[in-house]
Length: 134
Image (cartoon, rainbow, N blue to C red; front, side, top):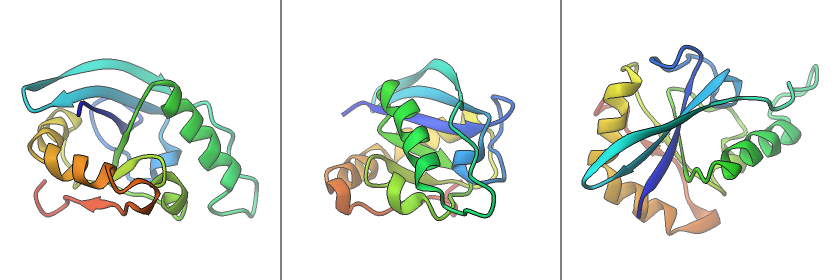
């Protein structure tokens, strides 16, 4: 399986310290056992959460639509918010530590089989925590 991963960022090089859905940009990479390559940068055009509404389902749907259009199957970030319960039904969610995205791509590649295994669980999947590795 080729992993098509979205990395949550504002600057294209480092992870945001906010929730995955609050990123200004997603850096999309294709990753497999043989290597990886950058695909494109995608702007987060999802609607802002309604005031006073945390874990807004509309925001989760908007982000999922953006990433599905790009054929993403893996979401990578330092932080996920309460919407992770919605997002992980459609994507493998991977938590990483505070490392540059260039290094994070290699961590995802090394863990390709674990991500594939989680993907196969379908809507019953949970997240993968690789913070200790990164």
